[in-house]
Image (tube, rainbow, N blue to C red; front, side, top):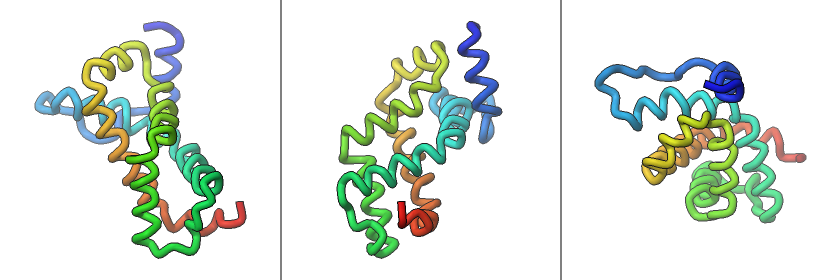
Length: 134
């Protein structure tokens, strides 16, 4: 393991969630790699989403909670440029071995990444009221 890989693993922190011998490769990857990265990058994801809302002149703050959630889901699922930006924020923190594992099953891992990211943003939707003036 090179210095970058060691640094990244220490920087991200411990596995979040359980990993057992019965866990699938994807579940292990999710708990050992994705969850710690998503937790670490949480503030950046929130800032990125608020920037997305402002740049696209979305009247997000006047929407109902359901509409806000819908906007979040659509932004992440349908705006390919925004989605790729978010993926880059995650993939950039992979080690070389993790990237090799990601490439082998990128389609399923991308679905997991985006699903987890949507849930993370939705769980913080009330915080976006505070940032209204930004």
